[in-house]
Length: 500
Ligand SMILES: Cc1ncc(COP(=O)(O)O)c(C=O)c1O
Image (cartoon, rainbow, N blue to C red; front, side, top):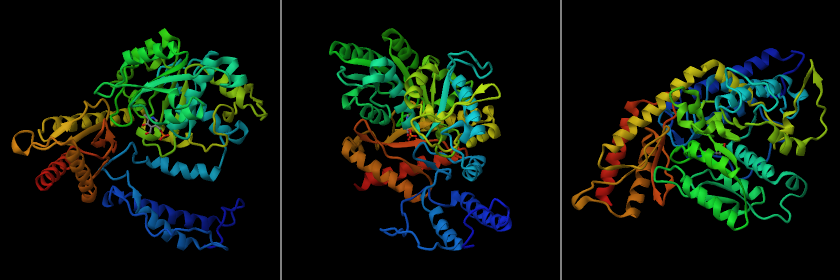
């Protein structure tokens, strides 16, 4: 199959293509359906040479298929039911296959005329998503008024947060900012928890606000930001002649999955007349559940929301979104800046929107199809039940940790993330009081779990300690598996504490 370079549009190699496709499907299915037999993480990248140069005249597909087989066995394996290291999920089956369709169509979200059906689909799915968070319209009652919300898919939560801070900065700066940028202006600052994602550091840097542009606000022990400290920081910034432009609430912090007190932050933002952004990249998924949605109360007051379906909705990467309450803000500050002369034609009486005028990215892959198909195939209620089940599993897991004197539960999980650590027998001669020794023991425990192939926990440094972290995302994760992992943690801990 050396010369099967394209799927010939005249159908002349249809059968050959079909055979190639089946071979890819066989490979994919063989690998994905045996994911539980592989390690959750294989750190050996294999025999990839140091230097690369492409072949001169091409290689046969058979050789390449062998090579792909080697790739499939390596790397992170979030399809393993015990993989609970990071916010990475098993991809939905329909999402996996829809990605191939997207590549075959090779449309471009830059402009309506380069992706008519997907530009329309994305706007509709995003409008529904805005409604899910209470931005303007509700899912049942789409509001078509002028000041309706608007949202776009972007490549990752980082880009969504950067975009939000960008619009917030420009909204605060108004026409002066649009014309002259930061030149001659006092420093602009925004306020977000010390536990907010480091994409806000990138945003501050990119937007010319510098390291001090993000004022890091201390959080409580439970991981939620202190709103009183945020209010005080705004006052001090103003007193120092700086220009506050936004406050950020996080719905699902990266390490502990904590949800900031969004209602209080919304009130603060309203009082101080600041942009209110919610980073719900992770925790936004609980809005799918009627039972859990109240935990996001206050998000409906946000001016912008980041939400990543790639994290908890089983949609393959990348699929993230930035949503705005009022389409006029990004229209004024992004669209005006980006308009590049692509025709905004009217078809069937409607103005057709070029989405590339609303996003930092120009050419953009069609990410909406795998999202749309996953939503349609699973259904909102079924997704909600899966999310609820994972939260319940996390609660039980946390309960088992809290009940075990050798382990320390480091927070009460609000979502499906549980952070804990081994601390040893608490009383008598065996008590381990030395933090550095405990850090070391927990590092070794994590290695032991990884080597066992039972599961995979991550090992973040949080509040100056090395801890174990379980993100319970896999739809086939069970109580029994979590019990086994805890047993393994305990027995490894005892052994290590006894020998070190
Ligand atoms: C809360 C939060 N916001 C933003 C991001 C950034 O998302 P991405 O990695 O898709 O850029 C993450 C990533 O884990 C996150 O946890």
